[in-house]
Length: 158
Image 1 (tube, helix red, strand yellow):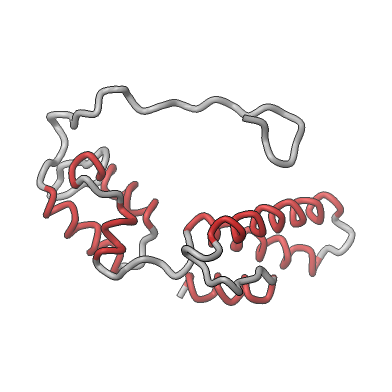
Image 2 (cartoon, rainbow, N blue to C red):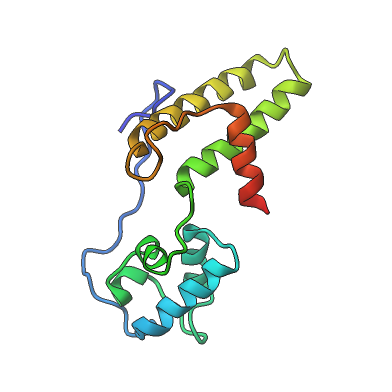
């Protein structure tokens, strides 16, 4: 698929293996994995950080390559079941953090045209994501504003 803001083609990425079986070396206790996900979420880790932590350190020293194969649920579903889901989707928050950094840079360097364009592209992506999530994960009247993004990012980092 082509990139959103350039004329270049996208690069292909690796796919997961076709077999939907859990490796014999991985952890297979679904309840222990869910408890570990909840524990990591309470520490303040995002769903992607939880997945990396489980892949690298696992549960009781045994790695968990895929939470969904073990538990039958995605990490975000486990968080929703335990009332730990984040207020805003993770991809939206990451883009807002990038926009806040670019805004801060633009305040100090008003003549930086390339970063001005980068900020416009990031804000365009944010608006597209807001339209996608509006109604389901975001309120109907949610509208992206740079000041609001900086407040969201500050709350996420606390």
